[in-house]
Length: 181
Image 1 (cartoon, rainbow, N blue to C red):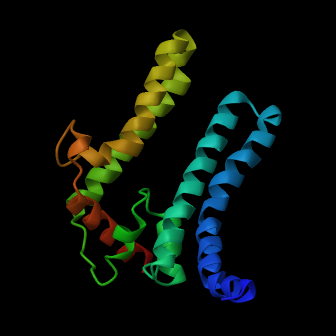
Image 2: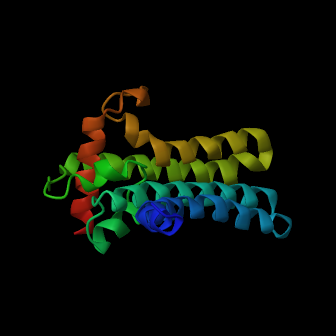
């Protein structure tokens, strides 16, 4: 086989390699772009921007893999994955396409109550406690962020977020997809 034939035969494999590389590009570029803004931002704002850039890059990469496997579905479901689903399990999220389960009112009330508790703690930490005790106020604010953002994960098994099983994640993905539809 001549060199030209060998090169031509390897083109589909090279195209697939480039398609795989595209999935990693945002994970490399977004943090670099955040780093370029480092001197123009306050340290805490830079930290959040960098964390968001890494999260968005990882989110894109997992979506790209699901898309390459043919699991990504339509643009509405992809938008729901990017904007509504906090996890990184793209294939698991898109696997619940046909499932729509109604979420009980008690679960909605519990989620709203925990979110409001987190908001109150965050406000109390930033506005009330921090005036007299800045360190305690900072910790109160962080506790509020944890309560509002993460407490839902351990609602069925209090204090043990590690027991968040694939089944629960699957149910949460189905609820998120139902909300997007």
